Structures are given as structure tokens and as C-alpha cells.
Image (tube, rainbow, N blue to C red; front, side, top):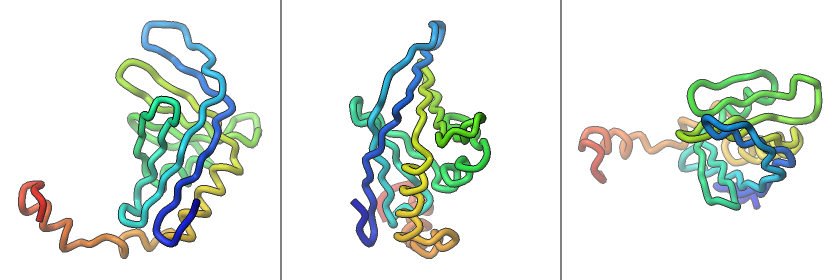
Length: 144
């Protein structure tokens, strides 16, 4: 569902691999996820694994850049398939395991297109209430 200010799209990762620390990797089968984008936080995308409810917040730019080349530092890495398959790989590093999800390139591009319709790339900072954000910082993180 895509509205004027928000997008919630279910997507499927037909391929998933779980790599628990200290154990062999195992095939996790298909995993369903929900991609959420909200104009109030225009730089972020939330990826929720629907079976577990685990949420990962990643940069919109990271997801967009990862469609064409490997990118990411830290807990999230996104890259296209090295064999030219229409797959985008999203690697999520947790404390006790790593999850590697293979999403359809068309599903990721559809989600990115939805984000573009809500907040065009390059105009994200126009959507931020800077007075509220600076008030939050000045107050030490307390509600302004």
C-alpha cells in the first residue's frame, strides 16, 4: 500500500540463509518481509521480518545504491547478485547470527519507486522539521 506520505509493501525473500555464530550456515527457505517508508523519516527504510517481527532500519540511500553495487558498513550490506541474476542480497549482521536475504530485484525497485513518489530523492531534508530536531538535541533528547 502506497499513500501520499507512507508506504507499506510486503515482499518475499525466496532465498534466505541463516549463519549462527559458531555454527554452520543453514538454508532458511523463503522469508516474508514488510518494507515500510514514512515521509516523516525520509532517510530511513524499515525492513520487518514478518514471521519474527524483527525490524531493521536502514538508509534509503543504502538500499538504492545496493541495487547496482555492493554497499554498506557495519550491520547492513546490500549488493546485486554477482552472477547477473535478478536478485538483490541484503545481509543483516546481528549479535548472535547473520541473515542473508535474496530479494527479487523488481520488488526492491518497486519499493524504491514508491519511496521516490512519496519523497523525491534529494528532497529528503525538506521533509524534516529542523526546529523540532534541534529542540530535541538542545533538550538532551527530551521531548521538545
